[in-house]
Length: 208
Image (tube, one colour):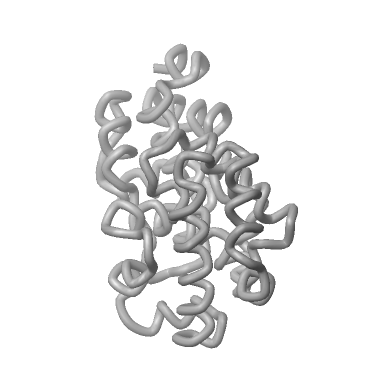
């Protein structure tokens, strides 16, 4: 029962997804929402606080700059300005370039629909996106596995580290069984990632 209590406390206290904080509804599995999360994964991949990345990605959405068509029409200065004023000043110029280049790449390579990545190896395909390497691919996979069967279940290194420290199994399959459903597993992965980066919440420590 102890592991179940810890898992529940993690989900309840720290189980919000980074994608939903950005405003991306990846549960819809639509091209626009998935592309916004792809941008988010690029931003989270940089050496910057996750909260700043979330703030920047959320600001892009408010300006409509999470849509490929809008990005392709916008000038670089506009995107840089949004990032600079919303927590992402350190990497505003390079990230603006990544966003513009990736919008163009996804439009040309996948007709604007990154679900085409599922045809081959999604983890390799996503690393063709500028600004995403192995760690970024892991970030993307952790949440898109909610709707992409090919990637389920995946935990990631930060989550595995936190699971071990909290007395939970670090094998994704065992954690998925403990969580009880795919959505709860994805939220548990997010919670473990947050616990690794920010420390476990008081509720989690008490449950342990």
